[in-house]
Length: 427
Image 1: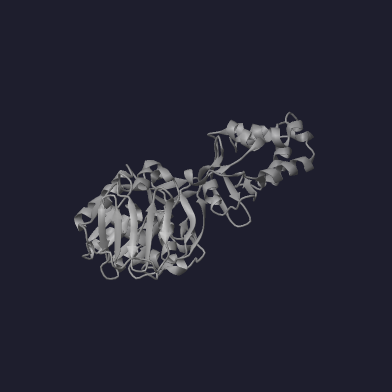
Image 2: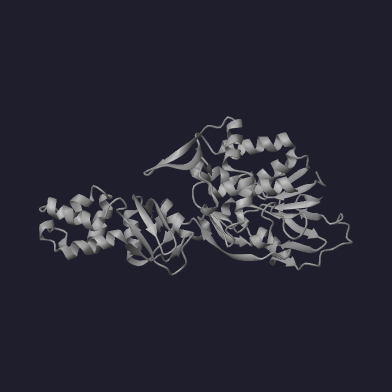
């Protein structure tokens, strides 16, 4: 397929959904993927079970400089539409339960491989062609040209410098030179992902192409990523590695009640990953360790009802023992062996305050190496919210590279399905 109607760069969730949608409308679609298999992020997501969507998708669960932008795509292809496709292929799934009840997060009962197999099957049925191990060497258009120069880095030629007389162009279409030959098409969809988890194919090509064609790109940072610490807090995290507890992790902008996991590098688990998307370097974060209790009244009640007990004896029933012992050495070492009856109320109130708002100051995050998403990216003001088309006719951007980032729990996959469907419906 040397001259398809549509070329899609990237065979991830968004790219495959776009290709399927366009091909079902009769378009001849070619997908170019730089890695050796399709859907690598799908395969590894959700611990190998793929958290493919969420029952409670709504625009408030997404971060963007333009919070209204995602509404159109999410309404055009909803979570129910994707669930119907999953059920059509006979894939069993379940809703994850949390301490607070059902979460809305849907996972494959067996394996994420089934989601990839479903997408490949849909591609085959619709006549989509996929080329793997395909490196893009240049993208040429009458208005701009982007060149991947491996020796000097990725370079682009500014808009207006695209060649018009070298035989590469057909009207106002796109010519892509690759390590597998030259391909031309009238439309180009860029679904190349963001910077997260480079080993799974994260790259800068989507952002470079956007800038080449005159689109604005907002600052990018890792999102849904573990926090790292230094000094004494790092030492504590190393001693507690593998321990988890439910907590409310919060800062001035957002709070999440989820599991908090201690690691050899810092804090992870859903609570930390969620809050990381709302954190800025240098800021503190806070943890409420007993979210079901008024901690001050609880500790004072223990003093009244169990005067001969030690504080850790009761905290052991609500928090992991290793964490209690660490907190004891941190905040009440001199009273560790003192019966509650002998504690001054002011001391219990001070401990309660620590447990209500344990202030932590991350040194940073683990970065793109383990980040699940890239925050920021291609400015949605330069894209159509209905079709994802840019101001260059026939050029579309979808998926993670666009400045739309969901919360943990299947929201980012739903954005991939929805934005891919929107573009595939328009090309």
